[in-house]
Figure 1 (cartoon, one colour):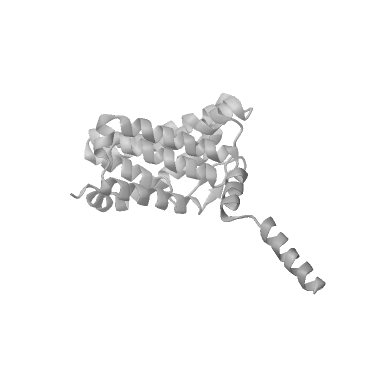
Figure 2 (cartoon, rainbow, N blue to C red):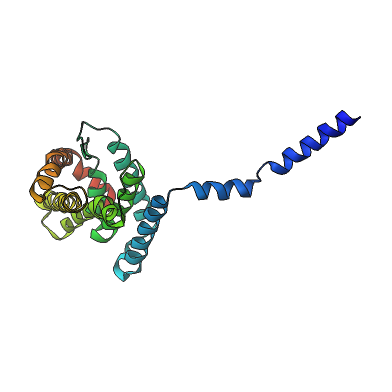
Length: 225
Protein backbone atom coordinates (compact mmCIF):
# COMPACT_ATOMS: atom_id res chain seq x y z
CA UNK A 1 0.00 0.00 0.00
CA UNK A 2 2.77 2.38 0.87
CA UNK A 3 4.41 1.63 -2.47
CA UNK A 4 1.16 2.47 -4.26
CA UNK A 5 0.84 5.78 -2.38
CA UNK A 6 4.48 6.63 -3.08
CA UNK A 7 3.96 5.92 -6.79
CA UNK A 8 0.80 8.03 -6.90
CA UNK A 9 2.53 10.92 -5.15
CA UNK A 10 5.47 10.66 -7.59
CA UNK A 11 3.08 10.85 -10.53
CA UNK A 12 1.33 13.87 -9.00
CA UNK A 13 4.67 15.59 -8.45
CA UNK A 14 5.74 14.88 -12.02
CA UNK A 15 2.44 16.22 -13.34
CA UNK A 16 2.84 19.40 -11.30
CA UNK A 17 6.43 19.81 -12.48
CA UNK A 18 5.57 19.32 -16.17
CA UNK A 19 5.21 22.70 -17.89
CA UNK A 20 1.82 23.61 -19.28
CA UNK A 21 1.24 24.56 -22.92
CA UNK A 22 1.22 28.21 -21.97
CA UNK A 23 4.49 27.94 -20.07
CA UNK A 24 6.15 26.18 -23.02
CA UNK A 25 4.96 28.94 -25.34
CA UNK A 26 6.35 31.65 -23.06
CA UNK A 27 9.67 29.79 -22.81
CA UNK A 28 9.92 29.55 -26.61
CA UNK A 29 9.30 33.28 -26.93
CA UNK A 30 11.94 33.91 -24.29
CA UNK A 31 14.45 31.78 -26.19
CA UNK A 32 13.98 33.78 -29.40
CA UNK A 33 17.10 35.94 -29.99
CA UNK A 34 16.65 39.66 -29.53
CA UNK A 35 18.03 40.22 -33.03
CA UNK A 36 15.08 38.29 -34.47
CA UNK A 37 12.62 40.55 -32.68
CA UNK A 38 14.53 43.58 -33.96
CA UNK A 39 14.28 42.24 -37.50
CA UNK A 40 10.55 41.68 -37.19
CA UNK A 41 10.06 45.13 -35.64
CA UNK A 42 11.99 46.84 -38.44
CA UNK A 43 10.01 45.20 -41.22
CA UNK A 44 6.74 45.91 -39.40
CA UNK A 45 7.70 49.56 -38.99
CA UNK A 46 8.72 49.94 -42.63
CA UNK A 47 5.54 48.22 -43.73
CA UNK A 48 3.43 50.56 -41.60
CA UNK A 49 5.18 53.62 -43.02
CA UNK A 50 4.80 52.52 -46.63
CA UNK A 51 1.23 51.38 -46.17
CA UNK A 52 0.39 54.70 -44.55
CA UNK A 53 1.40 56.53 -47.72
CA UNK A 54 -1.79 57.12 -49.63
CA UNK A 55 -0.65 56.04 -53.10
CA UNK A 56 1.17 52.96 -51.83
CA UNK A 57 -1.80 51.89 -49.69
CA UNK A 58 -4.13 52.01 -52.70
CA UNK A 59 -1.79 49.75 -54.68
CA UNK A 60 -2.18 46.84 -52.24
CA UNK A 61 -5.00 44.46 -53.06
CA UNK A 62 -5.43 40.69 -53.13
CA UNK A 63 -3.58 40.39 -56.44
CA UNK A 64 -0.63 42.50 -55.29
CA UNK A 65 -0.31 40.60 -52.01
CA UNK A 66 -0.48 37.24 -53.81
CA UNK A 67 2.24 38.14 -56.31
CA UNK A 68 4.34 39.78 -53.58
CA UNK A 69 4.26 36.57 -51.55
CA UNK A 70 5.13 34.52 -54.63
CA UNK A 71 8.03 36.81 -55.53
CA UNK A 72 9.49 36.62 -52.01
CA UNK A 73 9.12 32.84 -51.94
CA UNK A 74 10.76 32.36 -55.36
CA UNK A 75 13.62 34.71 -54.51
CA UNK A 76 14.20 32.96 -51.20
CA UNK A 77 14.27 29.49 -52.79
CA UNK A 78 16.63 30.63 -55.57
CA UNK A 79 18.94 32.22 -53.00
CA UNK A 80 19.47 28.78 -51.46
CA UNK A 81 21.18 27.61 -54.66
CA UNK A 82 24.57 29.30 -54.83
CA UNK A 83 26.62 29.13 -58.00
CA UNK A 84 29.51 30.75 -56.14
CA UNK A 85 29.82 31.89 -52.54
CA UNK A 86 32.16 34.64 -51.35
CA UNK A 87 34.20 33.95 -48.21
CA UNK A 88 32.93 36.99 -46.29
CA UNK A 89 29.32 36.89 -47.38
CA UNK A 90 27.55 37.39 -50.69
CA UNK A 91 27.03 34.91 -53.50
CA UNK A 92 26.15 34.43 -57.14
CA UNK A 93 22.78 32.72 -57.49
CA UNK A 94 20.60 31.54 -60.38
CA UNK A 95 18.67 34.81 -60.47
CA UNK A 96 17.46 35.14 -56.89
CA UNK A 97 16.92 38.90 -57.27
CA UNK A 98 14.84 38.56 -60.43
CA UNK A 99 11.40 37.75 -58.93
CA UNK A 100 11.57 40.83 -56.68
CA UNK A 101 12.80 42.95 -59.59
CA UNK A 102 10.01 41.82 -61.92
CA UNK A 103 7.42 42.39 -59.20
CA UNK A 104 8.76 45.91 -58.66
CA UNK A 105 8.75 46.67 -62.37
CA UNK A 106 5.13 45.52 -62.65
CA UNK A 107 3.64 47.06 -59.50
CA UNK A 108 5.86 50.09 -58.96
CA UNK A 109 8.56 51.29 -56.62
CA UNK A 110 6.43 51.57 -53.46
CA UNK A 111 5.31 47.93 -53.29
CA UNK A 112 8.72 46.85 -54.60
CA UNK A 113 10.58 48.56 -51.78
CA UNK A 114 8.39 46.90 -49.15
CA UNK A 115 8.72 43.45 -50.73
CA UNK A 116 12.49 43.92 -51.00
CA UNK A 117 12.67 44.83 -47.30
CA UNK A 118 10.71 41.72 -46.34
CA UNK A 119 13.04 39.60 -48.45
CA UNK A 120 16.05 41.22 -46.78
CA UNK A 121 14.78 40.25 -43.34
CA UNK A 122 14.33 36.67 -44.55
CA UNK A 123 17.91 36.70 -45.81
CA UNK A 124 19.06 37.72 -42.36
CA UNK A 125 16.98 35.05 -40.66
CA UNK A 126 18.47 32.50 -43.06
CA UNK A 127 21.80 32.87 -41.30
CA UNK A 128 22.95 36.47 -41.34
CA UNK A 129 25.25 38.43 -39.06
CA UNK A 130 24.17 41.00 -36.49
CA UNK A 131 26.59 43.50 -34.98
CA UNK A 132 24.13 46.30 -34.27
CA UNK A 133 20.92 47.76 -35.65
CA UNK A 134 22.71 50.01 -38.15
CA UNK A 135 24.76 47.18 -39.62
CA UNK A 136 21.60 45.07 -39.84
CA UNK A 137 19.78 47.85 -41.67
CA UNK A 138 22.59 48.40 -44.19
CA UNK A 139 23.50 44.76 -44.81
CA UNK A 140 19.98 43.37 -45.05
CA UNK A 141 17.01 45.73 -44.88
CA UNK A 142 18.26 48.64 -47.00
CA UNK A 143 20.42 46.49 -49.29
CA UNK A 144 17.46 44.36 -50.36
CA UNK A 145 14.96 47.20 -50.19
CA UNK A 146 17.04 48.67 -53.03
CA UNK A 147 15.71 45.91 -55.30
CA UNK A 148 12.46 47.85 -55.32
CA UNK A 149 14.21 50.60 -57.28
CA UNK A 150 13.55 48.44 -60.33
CA UNK A 151 10.08 49.97 -60.12
CA UNK A 152 11.45 53.02 -61.93
CA UNK A 153 11.02 50.90 -65.07
CA UNK A 154 7.33 51.89 -65.08
CA UNK A 155 8.38 55.43 -65.97
CA UNK A 156 10.95 54.45 -68.61
CA UNK A 157 10.60 53.15 -72.18
CA UNK A 158 9.57 49.50 -72.19
CA UNK A 159 12.38 48.47 -74.54
CA UNK A 160 15.18 49.14 -72.04
CA UNK A 161 13.48 50.44 -68.90
CA UNK A 162 13.50 47.10 -67.09
CA UNK A 163 17.24 46.65 -67.54
CA UNK A 164 17.95 50.21 -66.44
CA UNK A 165 15.83 49.62 -63.34
CA UNK A 166 17.65 46.37 -62.61
CA UNK A 167 21.01 48.12 -62.91
CA UNK A 168 19.84 50.90 -60.58
CA UNK A 169 18.63 48.34 -58.03
CA UNK A 170 21.97 46.50 -58.16
CA UNK A 171 23.87 49.77 -57.64
CA UNK A 172 21.65 50.63 -54.67
CA UNK A 173 22.26 47.24 -53.09
CA UNK A 174 26.00 47.51 -53.75
CA UNK A 175 26.22 50.95 -52.13
CA UNK A 176 24.37 49.79 -49.02
CA UNK A 177 26.55 46.68 -48.66
CA UNK A 178 29.68 48.75 -49.32
CA UNK A 179 28.81 51.21 -46.56
CA UNK A 180 28.18 48.31 -44.19
CA UNK A 181 31.59 46.85 -45.02
CA UNK A 182 33.29 50.20 -44.56
CA UNK A 183 31.52 51.19 -41.34
CA UNK A 184 31.24 47.88 -39.50
CA UNK A 185 33.54 45.25 -41.04
CA UNK A 186 36.82 47.20 -41.01
CA UNK A 187 37.08 47.25 -44.81
CA UNK A 188 38.35 50.30 -46.69
CA UNK A 189 35.78 51.97 -48.93
CA UNK A 190 37.13 50.98 -52.35
CA UNK A 191 38.05 47.40 -51.39
CA UNK A 192 34.55 47.03 -49.93
CA UNK A 193 33.03 48.26 -53.21
CA UNK A 194 35.22 45.90 -55.26
CA UNK A 195 34.36 42.98 -53.00
CA UNK A 196 30.62 43.54 -53.33
CA UNK A 197 30.92 44.11 -57.06
CA UNK A 198 32.68 40.77 -57.41
CA UNK A 199 29.45 38.90 -56.76
CA UNK A 200 26.78 41.52 -57.47
CA UNK A 201 27.88 42.20 -61.06
CA UNK A 202 27.66 38.55 -62.19
CA UNK A 203 24.52 38.03 -60.08
CA UNK A 204 22.85 40.99 -61.83
CA UNK A 205 24.02 39.82 -65.25
CA UNK A 206 22.44 36.42 -64.60
CA UNK A 207 19.17 38.19 -63.77
CA UNK A 208 19.36 40.27 -66.95
CA UNK A 209 20.05 37.25 -69.14
CA UNK A 210 17.12 35.38 -67.61
CA UNK A 211 14.93 38.47 -67.98
CA UNK A 212 15.68 38.56 -71.71
CA UNK A 213 13.90 35.20 -72.01
CA UNK A 214 11.11 35.37 -69.45
CA UNK A 215 10.43 39.04 -68.65
CA UNK A 216 7.79 39.69 -71.34
CA UNK A 217 5.49 36.75 -70.59
CA UNK A 218 5.91 37.19 -66.84
CA UNK A 219 5.18 40.93 -67.04
CA UNK A 220 2.03 40.22 -69.07
CA UNK A 221 0.83 37.91 -66.29
CA UNK A 222 1.69 40.39 -63.54
CA UNK A 223 0.02 43.30 -65.32
CA UNK A 224 -3.08 41.40 -66.41
CA UNK A 225 -6.30 42.75 -64.87
